[in-house]
Length: 66
Image (tube, rainbow, N blue to C red; front, side, top):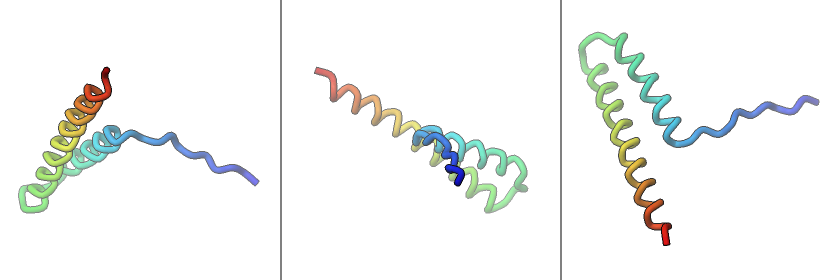
């Protein structure tokens, strides 16, 4: 029996970035309209989430210093 190959786990930052890139590709193909605005808003949410995560990760690292 073959063992299943598993991909390495992705970090939260990597998943956010990959999802943002997929949505940016989708956005480039959408015509003007409500759906395009929704995708653009989601991209902004992903950027904000990445920035907030970076800020919190930096702050958490500073808290652990002696």
